[in-house]
View 1 (tube, rainbow, N blue to C red):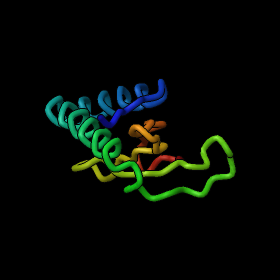
View 2 (cartoon, rainbow, N blue to C red; view 1 turned 135 degrees about the vertical axis):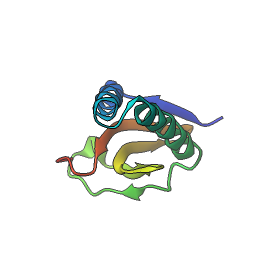
View 3 (tube, rainbow, N blue to C red; view 1 turned 30 degrees about the vertical axis):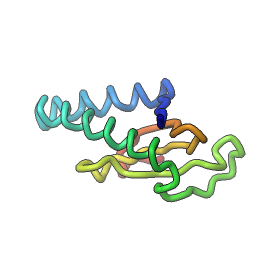
Length: 98
């Protein structure tokens, strides 16, 4: 079975986005964001190579890829493919300085 692992930074990112969406667009949208994020994480775990590869100089991030959260295309998932799924590194708004 495909496995999703989330780093601590990912958890913080999700909380920050949830709070922002709840305050600015309503609790229903914030909850839908979390549901869509989890669905997108599971999709990446099943198909870890679908995201666009990034070219970064940091060797620890050499295999980093990005993908969007379904229905929240302005929110990007940065992840590393793993043999058994995907490791979610960050979830950031596309307008941020990522």
